[in-house]
Image (tube, rainbow, N blue to C red; front, side, top):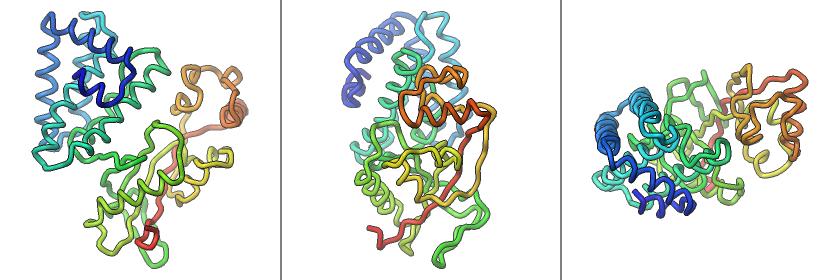
Length: 297
């Protein structure tokens, strides 16, 4: 476990603290219990378990918090690291390269850094996110993460190519791993198109994304730059607004739950969003699609 954290370039203080927490667990029954929970979950994942299975397993970590004195988010991370160790073996059994495993599990580092930023804890607060990593259907391919999905819109057509509701598309995610460099973005999309090429023999790959970045009101507020250029390629299919801006932590960090008038305004995006929310505006997420064609390679 410690070796995997080092391979994933966890901060040194996080490696020490998480390792110390694991040693504490090993002194009692809790380490063995986490081992058993991880083994049980990963066996179910091989059979295509749903998100509910992972959520149920994580509830066991919540129950340990009071007994062990270890923060729930650190316990979740310890559990996920155990699952990742088993996942590595499952990659080998499927003949998948170890570098693909490590690239995909780098998400543990990004989520650790988010937890440190928002809560000041070496842990993970979105453990439910790992279901599709663990059943080996979500992969990091360069800057982005990808997975097969069915199209959630009714019909999208462009240049004679149609995508209907239920058709296979490639869903993408943007991990918080740094700036959205255009060259890295294009290389990642092209790599994914090659990775999933057998699903789209005609050479046109439909990519979709469900993200707070595709809220049309937010898109108007995005300053000129790499993020705006990236999201402008998507054709908006649907929008879902929320009563609260649940992705606010991505913009405002640990202060995201403050009243709009008190939100930090240290960047242009923070200022634009805080002013919009203070004026009664609502933000949510948009679902969009774009087509990658062989000539784009």
